[in-house]
Structure formats: C-alpha cells, structure tokens
Length: 93
Image (cartoon, rainbow, N blue to C red; front, side):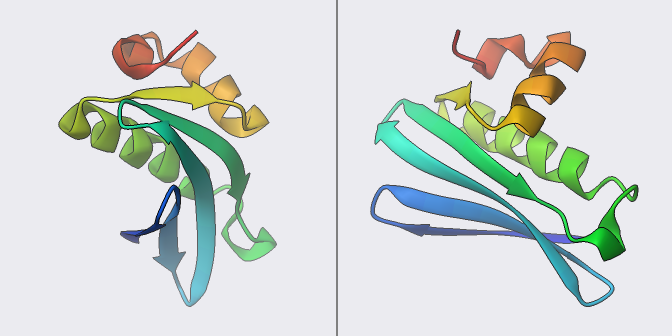
C-alpha cells in the first residue's frame, strides 16, 4: 500500500492506494502545532483491508515527526484514538 500526502495552504489529505483504489483522510491546519482530521473515506473495494487504520497510523506518525497534535473530529479517527492508547502523545483533547 502506498500512502502519499498532499497539502495546499491550510488543507491537506493523506491518500492510500491499493489495487487501483484510493482511500483518503482529510485534515486542516488550525495552527502550526494543531491539525484537525475531519474525514476518512475508504471505498468499498478496500474495506476490511486495513486502509483506514494505515491512514490513521500515518497521520499519527506525521504528527510525531512534525511536533504537532491532532484533533480527531472524524468519527473513524476518533474511534481509532480510543483504541490506541499509545497515540495519546499526539491527540489533543
């Protein structure tokens, strides 16, 4: 699975491509130290294959590298943060 990042101004997204299908996680930068994850989409063809989880983990790893915190407004990301106590260092709130 290939994960890429696109960012323009204060908006961005992580994309995961597998077998010709792409899932995405979108975010907004509210400040240099705070990112709001607001949406995750995984097409039906990729459901159950760990794509959403891979995107969430990628966002966490990027936050750690960049020194920022994540506000998980997206229901999927919020659910993942409750399942992964080891991510608390980068989760705001």
